[in-house]
Length: 351
Ligand code: HEM
Ligand SMILES: *[C@@H]1O[C@H](CO)[C@@H](O)[C@H](O)[C@H]1NC(C)=O
Ligand SMILES: *[C@@H]1O[C@H](CO)[C@@H](O)[C@H](O)[C@H]1NC(C)=O
Ligand SMILES: *[C@@H]1O[C@H](CO)[C@@H](O)[C@H](O)[C@H]1NC(C)=O
Ligand SMILES: *[C@@H]1O[C@H](CO)[C@@H](O)[C@H](O)[C@H]1NC(C)=O
Ligand SMILES: *[C@@H]1O[C@H](CO)[C@@H](O)[C@H](O)[C@H]1NC(C)=O
Ligand SMILES: *[C@@H]1O[C@H](CO)[C@@H](O)[C@H](O)[C@H]1NC(C)=O
Ligand SMILES: *[C@@H]1O[C@H](CO)[C@@H](O)[C@H](O)[C@H]1NC(C)=O
Ligand SMILES: *[C@@H]1O[C@H](CO)[C@@H](O)[C@H](O)[C@H]1NC(C)=O
Ligand SMILES: *[C@@H]1O[C@H](CO)[C@@H](O)[C@H](O)[C@H]1NC(C)=O
Ligand SMILES: *[C@@H]1O[C@H](CO)[C@@H](O)[C@H](O)[C@H]1NC(C)=O
Ligand SMILES: *[C@@H]1O[C@H](CO)[C@@H](O)[C@H](O)[C@H]1NC(C)=O
Ligand SMILES: *[C@@H]1O[C@H](CO)[C@@H](O)[C@H](O)[C@H]1NC(C)=O
Image 1 (spheres, rainbow, N blue to C red):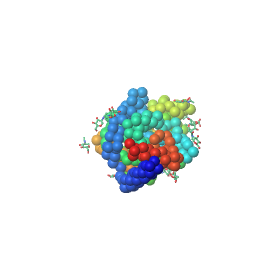
Image 2 (image 1 turned 90 degrees about the vertical axis):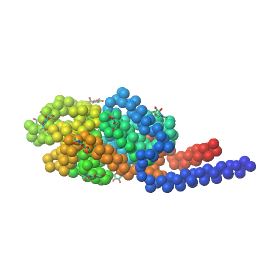
Image 3 (image 1 turned 90 degrees about the horizontal axis):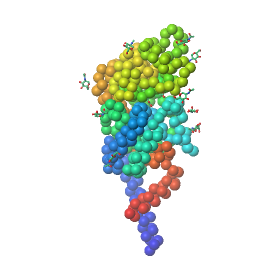
């Protein structure tokens, strides 16, 4: 009696797991969808909003930092939460890559969001989707547009520090920027619209000091940099000073998500060389800059489209990847994890 009951539950739970797997497999071709969590975690957007607002109280810059994390995630292995992984026996963390080290920030806030989301709907929402949601919330809280975030990404189990070291860099020329965006399926319109992310947040002196000093002709500095702005920057970033000193990326409206980034480029007041490249003499992207500078609505529409395009870079869906329980670590060794999940299924089947 006892043993037939046990085998009944074993059979039932196996059938349950198989049914789940069939459902999951059927979904594995699935596209991302704005309604993905509508029944499994209906409140996820407001939980993310709530947590980001909490963080914002003590840190204005966090809205920019969270937006940047989504970019640095999506350009490396696709939007799979890889940037969030710490070192472990199987992971060499992307946090140590040159563009991220002492620069990418907001990881503690992502952990707080994840904890709050797990508290409402355990094991449902991926860390990759949390980054996508946090970016949208951050843009809107800064005065930017709102949009329906596409969801359903799963978390990866690998990181790639080599690829992270190859992220677009502040000294890249237009050709290199176009190439790096093209490599992930993004065109010139996306490049110019997404660079508008530099309408808020900060950059360290070391990210643009190449534009301030040591030109072959020391009498004239970087000709693409406004001479008044050059003086301001030289004062804030003295030669031999602390390369970690922060500067606003947008000198006009430092914390507002608007189209001032583009009017800054028109007056040669882009902070990074990679910013000003978009408006260089003869640059094929200059006309797009002019369109976004002339009409903020046009910028917002194109920014939304480009964020959706970037969010679609090689997502893991269906049964690929996993839903991490801790954004900093891949889930436990697979055998141990499968047993734990099977036991969980068994007890929920009994209940
Ligand atoms: C086009 C190629 C890009 C390059 C070369 C680039 C480079 C940089 C650099 C060098 C910094 C300053 C880092 C530091 O000094 O610590 C920075 C900051 C930032 N980037 Fe980009 N970026 C690019 C595209 C993007 C995109 C696509 C977004 C988002 C849509 C973005 C959002 C940001 C934000 C918000 C900050 C400020 C972060 C903070 O204050 O914590 N960037 N970027
Ligand atoms: C949804 O989350 C928000 C923010 O955490 C909370 O204020 C609200 O009460 C939640 N609503 C429901 C129905 O759980
Ligand atoms: C992560 O591991 C790499 C190589 O295994 C090491 O060089 C690096 O210092 C470690 N980073 C941290 C933050 O522990
Ligand atoms: C990252 O920055 C730390 C200082 O905060 C430094 O000790 C470390 O060497 C850097 N890592 C790499 C890989 O450059
Ligand atoms: C968020 O987006 C909505 C819709 O576009 C807009 O009405 C609202 O003003 C935005 N929020 C902020 C703070 O700008
Ligand atoms: C890591 O990224 C580099 C550069 O993009 C690529 O050549 C390499 O194949 C990637 N490695 C893995 C294991 O995906
Ligand atoms: C852009 O930079 C790449 C890589 O540094 C270089 O090979 C290329 O010649 C540069 N192109 C232009 C037009 O300056
Ligand atoms: C980029 O692609 C979008 C469609 O995603 C298209 O509307 C736009 O015209 C393209 N831009 C360029 C410069 O080709
Ligand atoms: C510029 O050149 C001077 C003199 O050669 C040198 O001491 C200084 O470190 C250089 N600064 C930068 C930012 O390269
Ligand atoms: C070049 O200009 C910088 C900044 O004005 C100055 O500090 C430096 O002494 C000059 N270097 C030379 C070699 O004239
Ligand atoms: C530079 O500034 C950073 C933070 O602003 C600080 O942690 C660091 O100690 C400073 N380095 C030097 C050499 O003063
Ligand atoms: C430099 O910036 C000032 C202030 O924005 C602007 O009036 C001027 O036209 C700019 N100079 C150039 C060459 O764009
Ligand atoms: C800005 O662009 C929007 C969207 O294309 C359009 O509806 C609006 O009329 C434009 N505004 C101006 C002042 O041209």
